[in-house]
Length: 138
Length: 138
DNA sequence: TCCCTAAATAAGAATAATTATCTTTAAATA
DNA sequence: TATTTAAAGATAATTATTCTTATTTAGGGA
Image 1 (cartoon, each protein chain N blue to C red):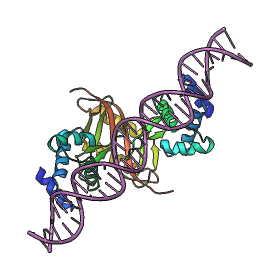
Image 2 (cartoon, chains in turn yellow, blue, purple, green; image 1 turned 135 degrees about the vertical axis):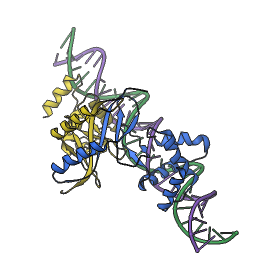
Image 3 (tube, rainbow over the protein chains, first blue to last red; image 1 turned 30 degrees about the vertical axis):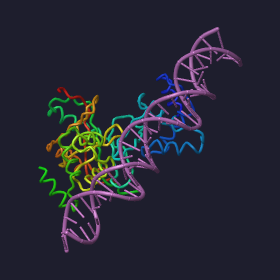
Image 4 (cartoon, chains in turn yellow, brown, green, red; image 1 turned 30 degrees about the horizontal axis):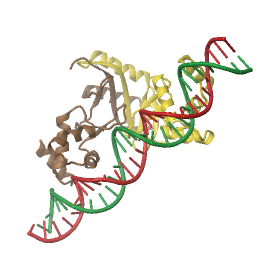
C-alpha cells in the first residue's frame, strides 16, 4: 500500500520523502479522520524531529493534489480523510468520532430529486450529508 | 422583532443588554451568515467600544441557548446563522457566500429512506446537506 | 556514481481566531 | 433605591495554522 502511495506521489510530480510517507501512513493507521495534531503525536515516536510546519504543509499539498480530503467539524480544527471516493460522514453528537458513510442508492435518490427539482439560480456541484447522532457500540 | 428577541432572552433567563441586542440585530442585518469579525466591524460604527471578547462570549451564549446556530465552513472561521428552523446550506464553490436552503419534501424523502434503510449501530439525530456549487446571479 | 538544482524540511517566529482572566459595570429583582 | 449577580471591558493567553529563512535531500542528468 505504501508502494501505491509512492507511485501516486510520483504521478503528481511530487517527491517521495520519508516524511510524506510517514504522514500518509499515520493517517491510515490512526483512522477516525485525525487532526494535524494527532498525526504529529503519532509520528513523533518514530520520527522525533519532524517539524509541525512540515506536517501542515504536507497535508495541504496532499489536499491540493487530491490525495486527502479535509473534513468539516463543529470545532475549528481541521481533520483529514484518506477516503477519496465520494462519501458522507456520520458524526457522533457526544464524542469526536467521525465515520465514513457510503450509500450509492441514497446518492441516486438525492441526485434524481434534484434533477426533477432544480434549485433556482444555483448549479449543484456536490452534495454532502452530515449525519449527526449516536453510535451504539464501541 | 427586537421585542421578540428581548422576550426570548428573558425566557432563557438571560439579561437583556444593549450589546446582546446589537449583536443579534447585526447578524440579521448583515445576512450571509457573518463571522464574529463581520459582526464586530458592523457594530463598531454605532458602538465603538464593544469588546471583542464580549462578542465571542455573547455568540457562544446564543448558540448554547439555541438562539443561533454555528455554520461549518471549509475554512477555520466560525460563522453564525440566525435561522433556527431545520434547514440546509448552499455553499458557493468560489466565494464565501452561504445561503439557506429549506425543502420539506426533500427532508421527507431522506427521512423515509433512512426509516427503511437504517444505518447499523447508529441512531440518527439530525441530517444536514452541504450543497456546494455556483450561484448564477448577483 | 557523483553532482546539481529545485523542491522539501526544520526551526521557530508570526498571525489569526478564539478563549480566559480579572476588574468594573449594569440589569433585574426585592 | 439598594443589592446581587450576571455581563461587559480590557487585555493577556492559548491554539491552530501559516510564514520565513536557512539547510537538507530527492531525483534527474553528466
